Length: 151
Image (cartoon, rainbow, N blue to C red; front, side):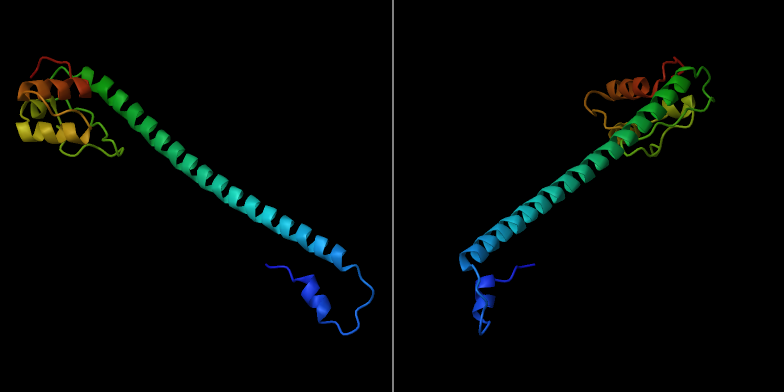
């Protein structure tokens, strides 16, 4: 809110009392400086609020990443103990912390994956898709913790 100009206001008074106009002008300047300082503090406070919001979002992302990593590490542990073709595999989560779509249900289903399915699974897990089909298959098997020689 703008402060009134006291000099202009004083000029509107028909018979002003004896006043110290220079002192009023100094007071006006001091008040203007206080207003400017207050506006500067408001801008800084807004920047601090934005940074806190960004840090909160980053913290949420870190929590989601930790949750995904924890789930995937446990899934790898379970998958590493699979010794039969009909034993269910534990589904890993993708980079969005959602279950990987098309994840093979068993060791037998894992062995039956074609090239396109392997590439799709690697993409969902944000893994490289370079190399031969057998290289990509091995990469996927290792990543999900599947170490059995069933396949």
